[in-house]
Amino acid sequence: MMNVIFVKDYDEMSEKAAEEISKVLTSKKDAILGLATGSTPVGMYEKLAEKYKKGELDFSQVKSVNLDEYVGLPEDHDQSYRYFMNYNLFDKVNIDKKNTHVPNGNAPDMEKEAKDYENLIDSLGGADIQVLGIGGNGHVGFNEPDDELNLFTSVVKLREETIKDNSRFFKSIHDVPKHAISMGMASILKSKKILLLASGKNKAKVIGELLNKNCVTTKNPSTFVRLHSDVTIIIDEEAAKHVKR
Ligand code: F6R
Image (cartoon, rainbow, N blue to C red; front, side, top):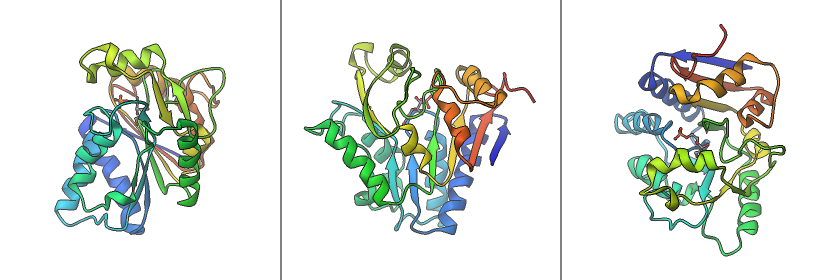
């Protein structure tokens, strides 16, 4: 089932997204959360931390797997995804850091790291819910539009447009890593539920492609979520601009 929730703005998207995660956490104390970074889920993490503070959520038995990580950034670099997750969520709730997994972008053998990460996802039995943002070019995780998409966790080369998009977080565009390690499309689809979030006009084109047509295309990797049987998509007015209703 695909459940599309239209909301007004970023704040309402974040609130609704936090509610979806809360539902999973209250029905399963030891849930496996599939998590994403980027600017989209920051508000959702804030709301989850607030709910934790109010005593509404307990992360003590929760485990997490993140979608991706840059290759070659030190863990404590403020743009590494490990740093992002600690800062935006893990340090603010009672999750045990040992139970939080982000691919290691500095492993001596990155191919092995990718295989090990995929095995880890399998050993956890897949995520109970996977949060996804979407790139302005339709990428999910770092699965960039191409003739072929990876099935499983792999080392990937970032597209020029993604390097440009993400340069806003770095001092200069030259500091943006050229490679990342990312779950593949099958790794993502192993999750029991998918929660895709989109906010802002930069996402309108790819969200239109995703929702207006009943097909998948490697030119817009987000369309592959249409193969999943339990997807919730939360989009704000700007991102929904091209959606035919
Ligand atoms: C992040 C990730 C990326 C982002 C996407 C959107 O873990 O995998 O696919 O979700 O690049 O980024 P923002 O949210 O910054 O627009």
